[in-house]
Image 1 (cartoon, rainbow, N blue to C red):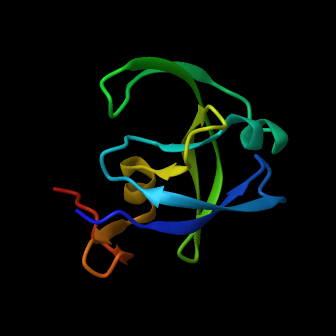
Image 2: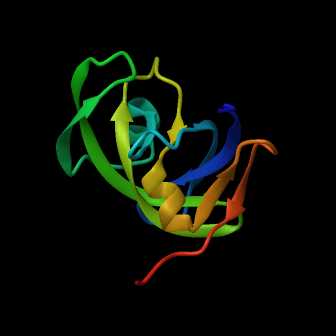
Length: 118
């Protein structure tokens, strides 16, 4: 599978201030993961703490919050993980689903995807 990144705009809770971040598209990640210092600077506060399994099988507990995100011309509130500043920003599967986006691995781009109400 190819690895690629896209720009994503992360907003403060009121949706007035946005910061552009280049993030890796990671369909294996549950949530969008961002540097904790950025989230704190934007005034985003943790709402819960969750357990996560990392790619190297380590188990960690990170704070989880939510905020406004702009991606591919749309804007939604999404859950975000407060990750250590040393970690790379990731766009996870939940954010992709909320935005109705899928992955074109050959073209290394995001593509519109139908939702299902079966």
